Length: 232
Image: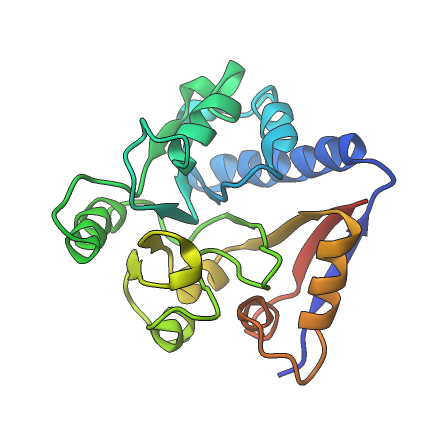
């Protein structure tokens, strides 16, 4: 299956944040109008901070929107590496403070137990996702699909029925929790948000027919084009 990419290119990161926030807000509001709720999974890192702050001010029926994470480090929200903490600081503010946020991290003895606890909570959410918002690392990973993940084939399997899976990868720094690709690719809208020329180069390489970086699998799922929002 060849890669399907729909590029949205902006001159500045501020322009990207404004346009991307408007797109996501419209999709979520339409979902609320159509079925009574909106459901979005967002990524961590530093790239989405500006976009999150803009999105938090949008006039959406936030009390009927559910926000969860694409992936999370196996750390409590008190950690500076927590994606949940990042979401609280940047997205779950202003109008978006009314939303229901569902984290992936739960205290547990092992990452496997933590994934099972998260799955028990997430299985009751209004799947499929309306919007899946992905980032990308310099090694071509997205979500917690690291190239050296011991269970990468499972994470990317189209037949995977799990909600939250554990990830062991040396390059990840600590164990991770992630939605599998099957949950992400079922979203009504899939978007990859990257910034900077270096990441654009990595992504372009990942879209080549022979590329096998983890993010390549997102574009080859064949169900729908994946939108890319990029600015220098």
